[in-house]
Length: 253
Ligand code: F6R
Image (cartoon, rainbow, N blue to C red):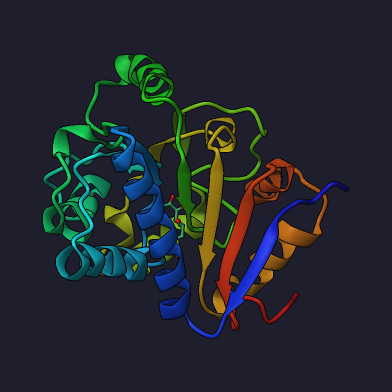
């Protein structure tokens, strides 16, 4: 096995978020000094909220500008418009974009409302837009208890591109509990997600995981040989990937 993942264990998620936000801020400022864009890959879910809070603080208190930031989110539920309060576009607006000076025209989230026969075209354009922006500098990831990154549920090959996926039962259940007021019938059954291959093309990847609920899957992703049955394990093939995790998520390493 050729696992190059760097594991950083923090006492708590706030300290992890502080350090990662500082790294993102340094990238944004370095690019701004060169008159260039910083391209961020962003995730939704409960995990990155603490990071977005710190980025907002850096904007409000330390003058960090997002004017030279282009962003690409990992995924979106299929069937939800950006105005739906459970859509990932809505999440990004309320948790980050509305609170900083980013140009929303440069923030990309897959479109969950395109008709079924146009999904393939939209996905191909998403990948092309990432390339045209120069590729992703830093991709932020969470991890699902199935081992999914983005919404790439197992089994998932390492070379998948942005595509439509069916959501796994456990993911639907977790999402109902966390986000859909426990109403399992309201959770969409499919989503559009960047593929694992798309994610692996990012120059740097930072996966975040907090709490003991993630300890088993963190262990599996780091310790088992890369396989379709744990999409996050493909990250072992990346040459600049960090797992930034709290002590509870690291408990089984
Ligand atoms: C969200 C995403 C998912 C989440 C994962 C963990 O954009 O791509 O892979 O990162 O489901 O979700 P939380 O953070 O809610 O535990």
